[in-house]
Length: 76
Image 1: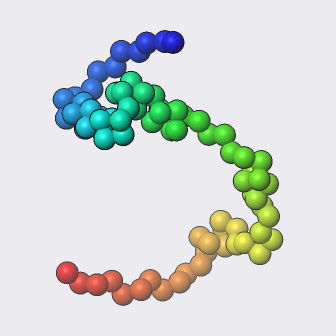
Image 2: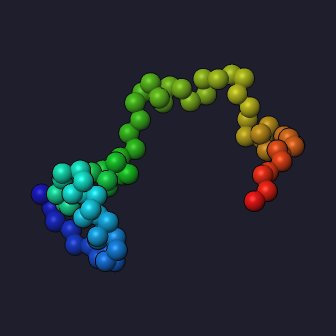
């Protein structure tokens, strides 16, 4: 298994230690899981097949050209 050295600030280190401890994992395993989740971009074929499956879904041009009135915002 490869080893990697990284430099992080002290606050981040403390947060990582705390979160890893809460999950019951080592710091190394905790960071490895986070990296794996963020790097892997494998989509199931069922999800890929959804692309373009809505025939009545508006195009990006239709969405950009819609001049809908925004709702009134609450004042603070």
